[in-house]
Length: 275
Image 1 (cartoon, rainbow, N blue to C red):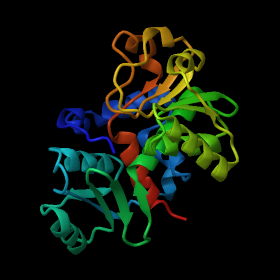
Image 2 (spheres, rainbow, N blue to C red; image 1 turned 180 degrees about the vertical axis):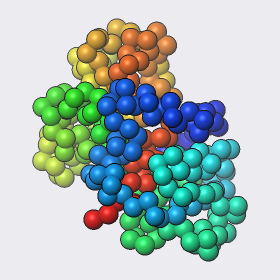
Image 3 (cartoon, rainbow, N blue to C red; image 1 turned 90 degrees about the horizontal axis):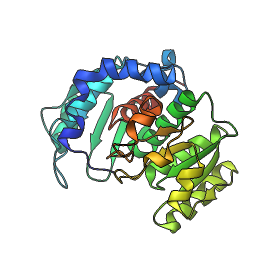
């Protein structure tokens, strides 16, 4: 999991309303509607009676200042009764349960999960972010069925994206700096969906020939102006942003990028959706 920095997230709570308006302008859908689409449900089928506890964890490299508060602000924006526990680690889990929280959200250096204590459902941020951005990209482009989509990065987010895009009917190609990762992703998608994924070996060529791009890498500023056309659409959950400063104005209205919002929204809808 990419380790965020405080400066990546400190603006989120104050800008959620504007962020939501921007999503509507680009995709025609709100944050909640995108999350519901990704979770294969409808907003009215998401149970908001659950209390959500976000628990700070001190293990590994420790707490990212503002992270738990930001996660709670996103779930609160979506209509959930959310709070950050005063205690950390096991004490935070105990506090959450004592205060009646049914949903526990917590992150360490390797995992960021949402857990529904009532149903036993667990949502992982990497997979949820992959699905959430795939859903948003499908909405932004007017539908991905039978359209070529290039996935950059074959990690957890890229894998979640590939499986979601396959189910949306997209024609998928993937590039990763480690060819073995691309091959493993392609094999998993084939086994689970029956869809064949094309392996791209040259990044620059792949960027030049593909107009719909899903950047799931932590690499900054490698998508340049020469790669952008009026028909280019980019979903970029990767932190930092892979689009360089010169290219950004050319694609700003067709670019989806945030550090937490879509992933967190998809996680909470995942574990709170009704059957």
